[in-house]
Image 1 (cartoon, rainbow, N blue to C red):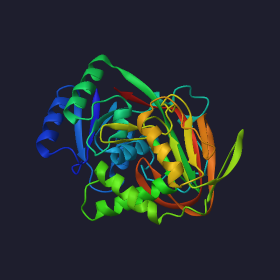
Image 2 (image 1 turned 180 degrees about the vertical axis):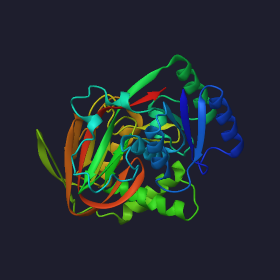
Image 3 (image 1 turned 180 degrees about the horizontal axis):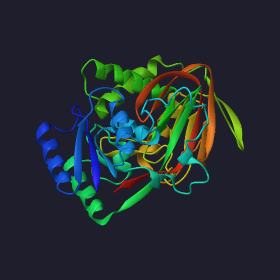
Image 4 (image 1 turned 60 degrees about the vertical axis):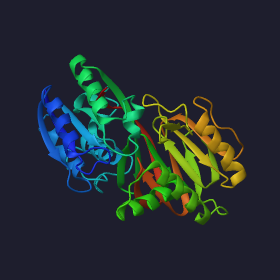
Length: 336
């Protein structure tokens, strides 16, 4: 079995010694090629190359951002550009994603995930240990047994651009927090759970809580306006605060369509009970007349009367006025 391992040398929770141990362990199980990522988008290019060269497996040692790039490279195999090329019309499916192909995942290399970031939401959502050494042991066992899980992805489309996401997307306040944390990371600070919480609290004071910009539309979905913030989920949990899972959309799963939680109020009297619920309840949906909720939807669109912050898998992508979200079933096979 030929495998390419993509290593982010700046991964938060690994060092050179740990990486060497993991590389030797994987190299003993497969015919391994190792590539280090050197710049934003590099993992996508490397993953696209691995697919074009017929590799059986692409493994990733890194955080959710590196995994997201890798997934986009595997599903956009022509050039591995993020986002997808402008020549791809919004809503266009790649040939392998057509209805004629019952299992598009079979035409792509399988994915191995070894968590190396600060949150590792995708890896933990798959049930992998958060420790990279323990996770390597789990995926080696999956390799020996050829144990695979087929997962769906989400896709966001805006204008003539598109990008896949593995666990979540967001528009509004949560994306504003992601933007602020990315600014802190650019200044050399680590993206710890405490930093996210502190940034969210500080940013809450500055965010607009009086003029909700977004409206939800979609086939068979009642139009809902007055939305300040929208969380779109491909699985649950949405994220983690340390070891504690955060579940605003507890019914979301890799095997179903997309879920969404939209907030039509941002006042503390609405937010505090919601935060308590999503931190403590594992299966029950949040309740409240100010919430807009979707479950297992094939697609929908969020439009805004002004540009709003937008993120995918914790990666800030600028401000947008309209984004369509779609579920892409049977997108990848993951050895887990």
